[in-house]
Length: 335
Length: 240
Image 1 (spheres, each protein chain N blue to C red):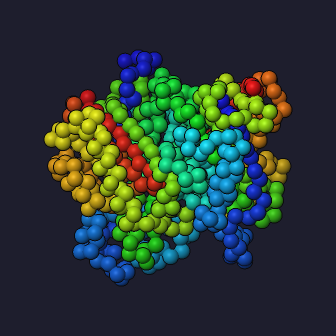
Image 2 (tube, helix red, strand yellow):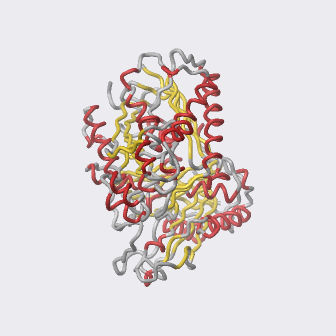
Image 3 (tube, one colour):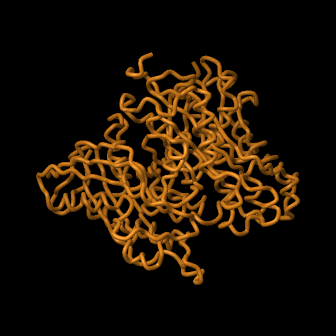
């Protein structure tokens, strides 16, 4: 197809991801002696393993008490993960980097002040394109797709690179049992186009927020992550169910054919949601148990890990939410 | 698109708490909303909207930007929504100095059926937290606000004499940023004789002056970025 022609729907051409390599399992968290154990973590949040950019020995020795040193000892920065995920994506799709005309990125853990972080990633990738951050933390994958889905599609450049990257474990106080068990690090990169057909097309998208509750989740620029966990969890279940119901009604979703991907905050929360909507396990794609909460990168990483399972006609409902408090959904249809 | 109202305020008082006196980084950034420059931005927005004759609930979306945030989460737009007690879509589009230009370009290219009726844009350039003490007076923090509508006659009076800016065209091109940070824990010293107004606020200052003093004229505002990799040319006309 000619790159001059605009398709009727924005296309998702591919997704790739990167993780750091330090494994934090529940036995390790138990060994930190912070008043938690494998059984408690498994029961409460259903997470068994996380991947961190901090060396395991560094966490053991320091519990990340001096947050100003985390970046120095980290094996990967948020920029590194974004670059690694993007290089995999471009190699998979055989897209030369000079074709990328726009880069947008979301991170709640920028490597340095004076953001946009996207500019640093662009420079490291050697891209010759404008780049900026579109930020809302964990629902960013839906926000990025929704943002470009609002355009007159003929106005969009040929290829748009989107990235969600976060190194939340560098912002975790490992003396605090509540946050220590949640977070992983990771990045997802995805390619959008309105001119080249992809395996998935964007059928529907939405995004909204309740800023009055914005202090329920906070990441200080030079401090720790903190949240009102109970309030955020209740909001997450209710709002995800609400988004799913809307998509079910609007598109007659069939959970024996269609698939749900939620925010990978924790596995027990996702089970509550799938139980409510009667979504069978095979049609719920998730990696929270073995990868933890990878912030905004979680949902697109799950999509990437299950890309080979996409079959024509299948709808993929991605409903994600988090800080802001904000939420977004996107309905993708496989071709 | 029409820019119906603009505001800019210099924040000369420090936003943070004195600490770590023996190091060059001599105060920590406040992370509490109540002490933050974002709180001040909310107060400014309330008076800004009252002056424009716009009830906060008429705003359909808030866009925000901060080039040097005290908190990366929530976003500046979301803190503004809290200040105005709004439950509406809000997110940050961060492109450094060209942030407002980028938003205008985005809104122009948005499908008309998806264009917001009335958008509030907030820029908080709280750069002082990352500068050496001697330079804080030279490079203060700024809060800037803009009301943007798709309709010439949308609710919301224009500033003072009834003028507003018709945004005719925005051109974005790739550029190189000049300011390089070290870390969240170190301050930097800026080159002598460099720009003294950072972030997106510079554009707001220029557009404000145009709106007040150049009625009936077509104006071009050029953004050459210190922060971010986007250069911009904004073409506006002052109309009544």
